[in-house]
Amino acid sequence: QSALTQPASVSGSLGQSITISCTGTSSDVGAYKYVSWYQLHPGKAPKLLIYDVSNRPSGVSDRFSGSKSANTASLTISGLQAEDEADYHCSSYTSSATLVFGGGTKLTVL
Amino acid sequence: EVQLVESGGGEVRPGGSLRLSCAASGFIFDNYAMSWVRQVPGQGLEWVSGLNWNGGSTTYADSVKGRFIISRDNAKNSLYLQMNSLRAEDTALYYCARGGPWAPLYHDYWGQGTLVTVSS
Image: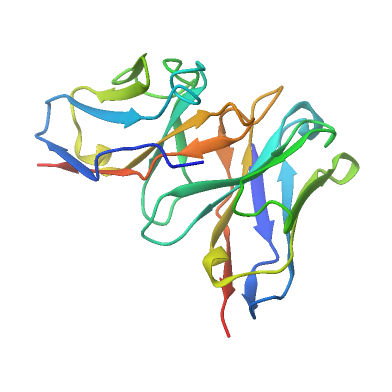
């Protein structure tokens, strides 16, 4: 199972919005609504931001939103804040009944 | 408060074995699927294995299939990963993660991880 494709890095200024893409295939992202997004800060456990493409767990800021079109899922962060600087990883359920992650995207807040 | 605490990591030679454990607390353990996810420092996350609430359904990444065995003991609120025939490429930080109620389709709580180093 090949990893989902994410840009290695993205950047944005404080207060702006950015979007991170996550491209898979018709056997994973395109086939199911089970895409999730995670935020990783160095030395801390991953944090779930989005599940089932666009649902936010309780306690996650509404500045984080998710969507999907065909084989590509997207995470949008609006009103960028300094603490949003982190690595972001997507994940999808697959037709093999496994999970696959993306390679991760490093977000720099300027 | 949900807590997941991994243990059992360490340094092992290629071909060796290790058993990871994850102690869960703060939630009804047998209501949730669970997974092991690993991360090579500086690289992306890799899902390793998952199982449903009673361990009756298990799945594995191709990279570990036939070498690793996931299991759980609901009476002890514990998750395990038996790792055999270890290779250098298995070196990573291994996380225990709580999945959804039916299957490990997403993971809402994670432990801090336990480091496995496979080296001669």
